[in-house]
Length: 173
Image (cartoon, rainbow, N blue to C red; front, side, top):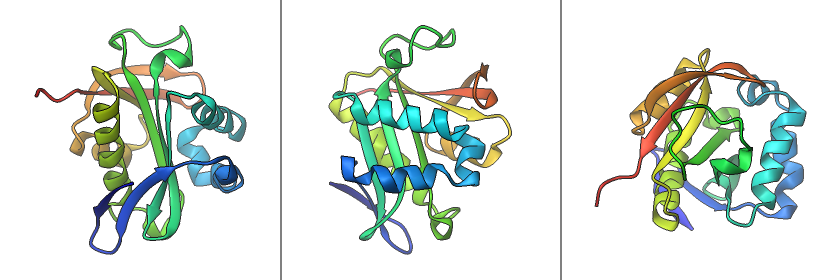
């Protein structure tokens, strides 16, 4: 398990297990999660695909001993042939959310993102990471920028509408 401290608690990522599905599904039903992840059916489908793909990385975000969110990374080719132009072959797509309202806006998401980025670049040969962020979610865009992601283009996501495709390149050794 990897960890990173915030001013309040230690943020860690632990592998998501089948037993976590009920909790994750409850989180996905929250209106504020659906606002950025899309409707419940599409969000559940995305998470299920990550959980059921052996090479994907599916994690529960922990604050101390408390589960507060979910994160995953998956080879973007698993999403099918409709990927936007400009995505390098071998890119891994990442996503995460902090479900606990008391942990939002306090750095937990950025700490979890840093842990996930480190894990992907340490355990895969991905040349880059991608994330798709609604153009209406400026706070998330700014958080991804602080984490080293760059705007690549706007893509019309069929679920959430216009979204920034943001990329972060593998660090040079």
